[in-house]
Image (cartoon, rainbow, N blue to C red; front, side, top):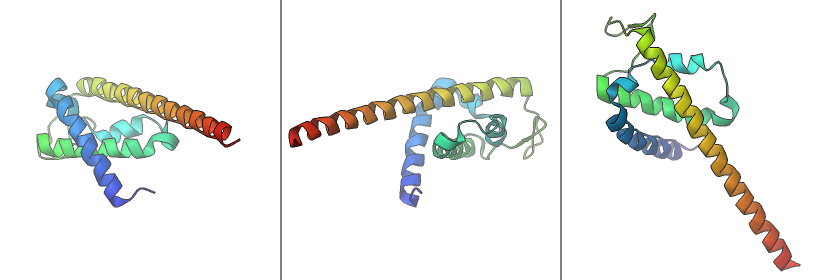
Length: 132
């Protein structure tokens, strides 16, 4: 279980990363229902990366509050807070982009963890040799 301070620290760091992303992709990138996107993943990868996904969700919703003055919730392509249609064929590619980004980030994280585990194992083996 993460502490409140750790969650806030991770959330702030992730929002900082989004600042550059906003400059590169524009605010349209964030115009989607994050909850619907998460549901579309059908529960894949949740065991290993639930925490990171939750941080990403909170970050996205905060960015939406900054950019749109609200969190976006859609019902059949209609923003339930503004009654404006958000065309689904424009929204779906953004959802796919988010999914691909999430997959890429999780792959990089797994690779980093693997490298650290190998380094720890190597150091432990060296210490075992020295201690013999």
